[in-house]
Amino acid sequence: MGDRPVDPDAETIETLKAVRGFVEAQAEFGLTEFRCARADADARLADFHESIRDCRMCGLCESRRSVVFGSGNPDAGLMFVGEAPGAEEDRTGLPFVGAAGALLTRMIEAIGFKREDVYIANVIKCRPPGNRDPRPEEIETCKPFLERQIEHIQPVAICALGLFAAQTLLETDEPMGSLRGRIFSYRGIHLIPTYHPAALLRNRHWKRPAWEDLQLLRRVYDNTAG
Ligand code: SF4
Image 1 (tube, rainbow, N blue to C red):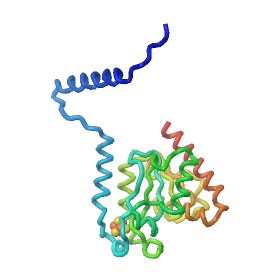
Image 2: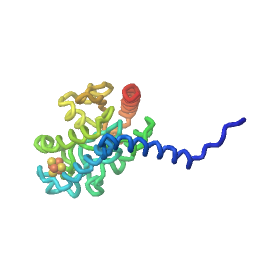
Image 3: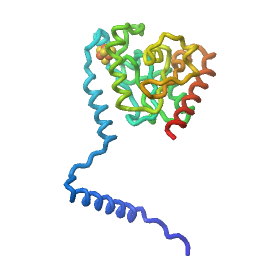
Image 4: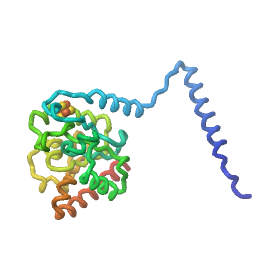
């Protein structure tokens, strides 16, 4: 006798019956409220975003159009962290749009993820005028926002995109030449530095080492996430 075809509606009904039985059993012990811890964490990240949407804690608020918080999956196992928004990011309110953003999307896809699978953010949330380097006091003021984002997301691994993000997160002044190709720990989370996509657009000789860094990132992710 062959296997009987599975009726998806019947399967759903059986699952719902099982869930109902579980809930009723819990209610007998006085437990009446059920909450999903991950959903709570996602809501907290959204609340946090809302809370800094109009931040005026440093001078960059004077010239910015948007606080570019970050985008992607709040449950992401992989997080990519860049420097600061540029003109297009300031206009759209999203990180890594434009040519560098398109290259980052291809880099993410090259190691088997989709852009929406990962979370992307910057160290600095508002665009420095004329894309100048962020000042130390701006970094000090804004960096805790990134730290809180990382705490919320709890990724398996972080890819620091560019020297600024790598040096800020690792609190070092080592050059990229000695940082890339290595695995660091940021508060117990693996951190792999590599070149910023905008730098890769300017210097094609860095593409091969960046590809090696991405492969390292994927291996670290696979070994840790299981
Ligand atoms: S750069 Fe950061 S600290 Fe400064 S105004 Fe924007 S969000 Fe606030």
